[in-house]
Length: 111
Image (cartoon, rainbow, N blue to C red):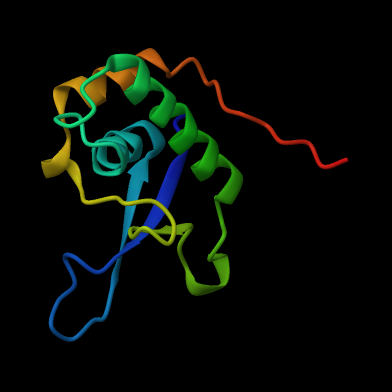
């Protein structure tokens, strides 16, 4: 079963609501984060984008539930991760997310 993230977004909020919550499968979420944090046009190297995908996956796994009391996991701005939705997905960034998908994330053990 795929894990999901609940993202607080201001972009699609209605006039009477200051924000909405979007539920996204993690891989779908990452496809909307990676190209917005490392522009594939400016940084079109697959290895750089794969590294960004690992960093983004690590961040969301580490910070899942960060705003649980407010009813979401992460925000969609540079305070958390820049998620601008499916319309900002990029083929090269999507390829990088898929190639870096082996479940790999960095774990910082507190000692």
